Image (cartoon, rainbow, N blue to C red; front, side, top):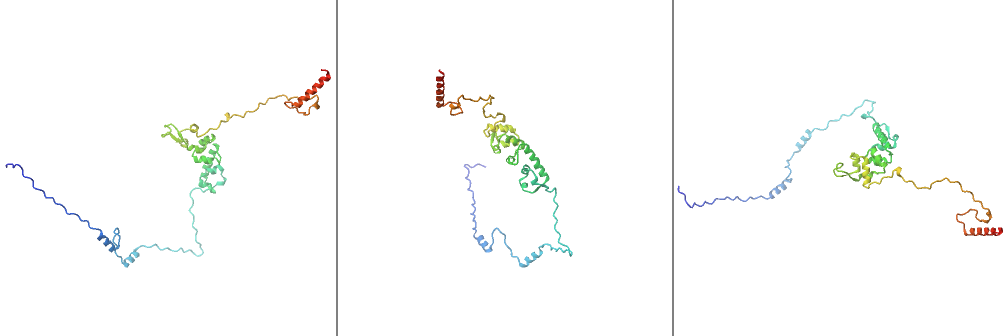
Length: 272
């Protein structure tokens, strides 16, 4: 077949355009809901007859009937017995414990009259440890809130450190704390630094002024005591010539003139 040149132009394609979609308005649905008197989110309610309600109520199980307790003639109503308490009962009087041991008790047990023996034993053991560290019932409360053990608390309290200073930040090496700084309380409690090193860090940071050592305390200067023989008593040859028998350190002008006139008269009489 011979090829026709130029080729015939292609015939135009038919493009079908869909009709526009019409969305109905919500007016009919709203009118329907108003006619039904119900919410669109709730299912439709079906009418239930009164006979059906009564049948459902009769089929529902009710509470079991209670039988009254009938006692024999002359017998009283028995009392309900309390269940036995498991474990030992509180048998240690709180008032008989020491003042420091009462501070060691939990706060909810300090105002009670009795406590358990194991709780009292733990409180007494803790009181002995704090007493050995040099604390009493008045000074131990602030250190208990700090969370330190008795040995570390006694070391710091003996050098004049107050618990409020322990919340200050200290610069430490990075191998001790990753951030390069930590509170003194954290360093002592965690054991990352000895308590002596923490005390020196507080002093270097200017957060605490150390107390003077007892051996280095300077004594007040005093006069040296020298044993001297007592001074001889002053005896005047003519006590009547002096008005004041108590001699002064510096003679007065009146006294010097009286002496000069007295010695001058004596010289004239002696022919001197």
